[in-house]
Picture (cartoon, one colour):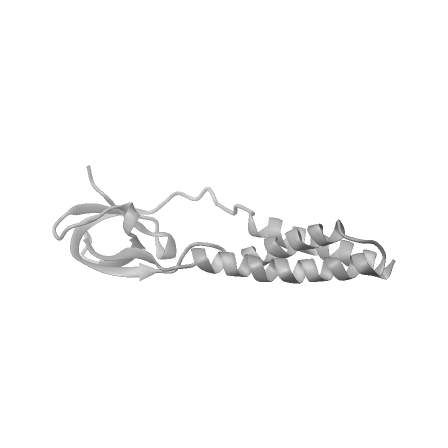
Length: 149
C-alpha cells in the first residue's frame, strides 16, 4: 500500500515536471530589428537544442508503466522500480545520440549605428558573405541574422 502511494506520487511529480518543461512562455513584446552589413563569417558548432534529461524522464515513465503490468504484490513493486531504472538508462542513452553539436556560423555584423554585433546561429538558417546587407532580429541569445531582400 505504501509503495502504491509512493509510485502514484512519483508518477504525478514526473508528469508535472515534464509538462512544466513543455510550457511555452513567449511574450508579446515587439521584436528589436537592426540593419547592418556582414563583416566576417566563421564556421563553428553549437550545442543541440534538445532538452537535457527529457530522455531519462520519458524512459523512466515508460519503464514504470511497463513494470506496473508485470506480476502482483511485492513482485509488481520490484518490476516497477526495475522498469523505471532501466527505462531511465535506456532513455538517457537514446538522448545522447541526439545531443551532438550542430554546425553553425558566427556572424559579425556592423550595424548602421556603427556597433559591431556577433551572432552565432545554426548553419541551416542560411549562409552569409562579407559585405551582405542583413537584419539582426531580436537580441541576446535569441538574436538571429536574416538577409535583407
